[in-house]
Amino acid sequence: MSARYPAARPRRLRRTPALRRLVAETRPRPEELILPMFVKEGIDEPQPVESMPGVVQHTRDSLRAAALDAVEAGVGGLMLFGIPAHKDERGSAADDPGGVVQQALRDLSAELGDDDTVLMADLCLDEYTSHGHCGLLTLSGDVDNDATLERYADIAVAQADAGVQVVAPSGMMDGQVGAIRAALDHAGYTDVAILAYAAKYASAFYGPFREAAEGAPQFGDRSGYQQDPANATEALREAELDIGEGADMVMVKPGLAYLDIIARIADTATVPVSAYQVSGEYAMVEAAARQGWVDRERAVLESLVSYRRAGARQILTYWAAEAARLLR
Ligand code: PBG
Image 1 (spheres, rainbow, N blue to C red):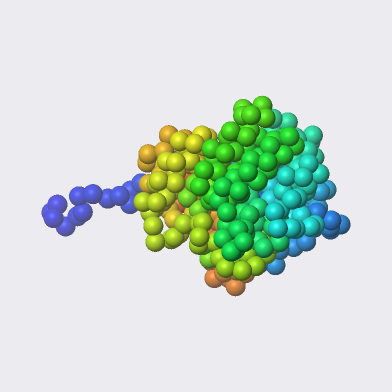
Image 2: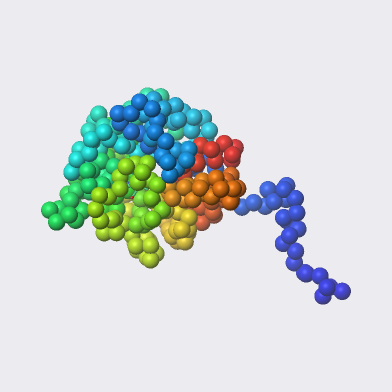
């Protein structure tokens, strides 16, 4: 008789919602979600980003309101990206004390206490340079690694002066974490933390971001500094180097197509591992949902669970505020 029945029945624990809740291993927490936000200089009204329905380029005022709303929703952090009114070869606006991100950081740190949220800023040059590359160029048009490090050091200090708690260098220059750590320490900002974009791939999934942040390279691409999607081992080395240089947290980006990378780094890293659910991932789900082809909320939550299951703790996502509300 026993031959007629399966000996093991995993379905038993899937039978009711209560049983499924009881045995669920993974649940993203609102406190671990980080909302990336765009703030643009010189606009009077928030500007919708066409390729990212629901995402806008904020004015100073609308940023403040949206930040308060996200904190209300329970998100753990805010990551600011700035779009300056004027770009030049060296991205001068990036470390200008009156620059758009520095202003926004001052606004938000006046509004929000240390207990409310963690204020973070992307630290890069692509939104600020006329050529759209993440660093200074040599005469032949290559990105000059070591000259760029000096720019990053100045930007870190300008952001710290404006009240940032965590800087997030995303330019993939060699030695960037060490250079930024030294500059912050030298300026007395020993408590400002570094969330390093450690493994950042040259990805097609950044497409919509280039519209949102107006940082598309004017010539060439970023394959000379961002990683080749073919490589995994290199990501382990990048994370190891960043941790060695003083990164307090390391990030993998994008996430969904790189869950293996998240899992491998999370296996060995001795600092929290974060992941960035990038603009293209957001756009894909939003576009398909608009057609009625996927259930939007389920797809959003399922993707966040998959990040968490892979080993990411903090998740940067444009859905952070909404997802935080759904998860509460
Ligand atoms: C560079 C930067 C990029 C993103 C975050 N920081 C673009 C790039 O490297 O080309 C992409 C984020 C996204 O796609 O959501 N400062």
